Length: 200
Length: 221
Image (cartoon, rainbow over all chains, first blue to last red; front, side):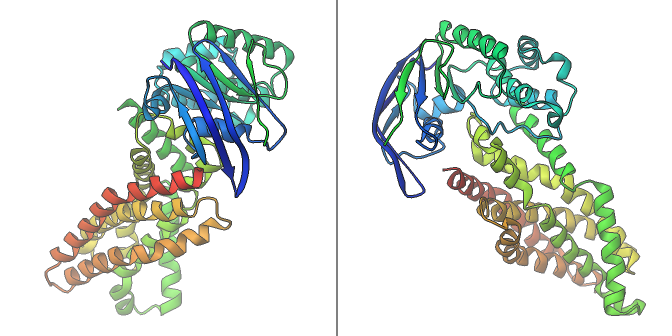
């Protein structure tokens, strides 16, 4: 479990342009952060930096008493627009694989599909799903393989009002269980969250 | 372990869909076996002499065809991001991707290679050695090819770049395998060539994943 996410004095550079510098915030287990900022401000890059995909220009990202490699190997979920789901494979094949990859079991994947109301869609190819259904499929793996830090890139954008509320409940449940959430958003998150402004 | 097996089965199925499988490779060799007599002339003696070598070069080129999508699609759709967030090192994941590629395209091509060579007039006794060389060579082509595919990630016209990077790396196995086949059909000692081919394949399997993982990390960052 990640007990605390600490971002200190962080600077990120993408393609020669300094996105932001001196960014810092601390998130304790059980709380959420909402990254707000204009398009291109660096919200997605910050999520990728926390996931270890982008090297920071300066600053530190700490995961409590866990080493960064261990935290990234077993305690982080990343969910964004690019969900890694292959259009020609069935929803179940994709959910099952990504659940196993994140360390969950097929039973847990079934249960997660049930909770996100995907059971009757599991035999369909991913290409046949609507944008919202596809997003729900990629969010199902967050429930199927428990990991404490969720990095979400505009998780709610393709979801309808009903599903936004229901996913809000799932986020609240994750926080109540000692999880952490960092989400890049344009609309307010449906759970209480620390607002982190991303700006140069 | 279950992670590795899950990834291997996924990669094999995906590579199969990208243009692997026995029918495609048989079709490819059927095309080569038809083109070659048209290009060199149909005299049986001449065809029989070049048949093993032609089947061998065709294998190297066929390995190129499906390589450019090995990492590209995962890179574009975000799967590569998620593959890094796992206790299994990215090096192992890259090795598994190449192994899946080999199972789905290299192995069926190796099965078809002796058929094509014999159809062109190679001696039937050569068939087992052509099969063994193709199997071993295919492994080297997949793992060396993976290096090229990962290095060209994010480049426009990555497929062409992959070919330019990879073809020089294909030279040693083509020489060793072709040499072994040549010596065998001439009644000369062929084991040295085959051993060198196997050594090259082993080196590719051992070192390729390190380079691939580094190239993938670089492309993602």
